[in-house]
Image (cartoon, rainbow, N blue to C red; front, side, top):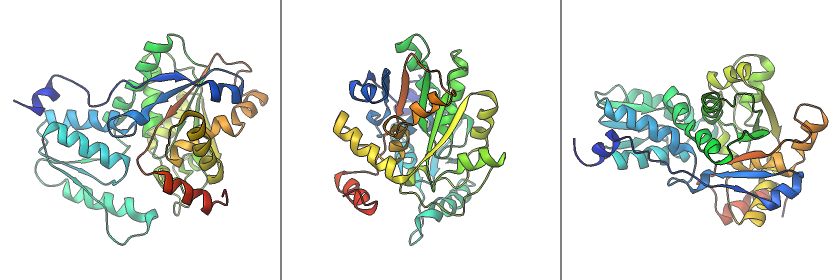
Length: 313
């Protein structure tokens, strides 16, 4: 075994240890220390490389010769990056001429068909134990820096892979009591809908501008996490998520996707204060950690277009 596969066998991760920095601006907004876990600086621009990189390394060890992924977004970018590091081919599947809300469902079916070929492995963008195991590395990094657990951890939920991974990581380091504030946008709220129904719910379509939160059905493991961990499922409007993206750009000189804006909206919209007032969150938590999940599907022009679409000028 030589070259990239030799690196894989040594267990060298494809993700980096990302900065955890206290934000003066966001701390002022909520009146408590806010730490930002900057996953947007990962080599692939989002947290996805943690889980998908780990998945790809593990299947490569077992003889995978070709990777398939049904995502042209952050998961697909992570899959392509991992494949290149491993020195094996990857096929990223997206159908042509299909409306955004059904792109993933059709592409996933095609990816599953391709993965029937000998030596080909399908990478689910969020729903696999190896993916969650990889995402759990984020929590180990938090403990290494913070030492003591934060008062709450804020993250965005799309398909639920990050939530499942972070939950597993919290259990691993003995922080399972830390409340998780799971943020979604209206129109991409499959997790919130599942919690209210007490079972998995498939949204008819994705109407939110936060397309990277656009899983019509959340992973079953995400729903299972609510039985073992204190998870607050909260939904914000698209306008709040996009406003949070703009404010974060102004405050921290960092541009992220609306999907990430959903998590940041927990700070900017007054949500944390409401949870405290309702007695659901400790009145004076030691600190709050927000996972800045990042994202590649944004630039200055796209942000201005989203603001115009939502009447924000």
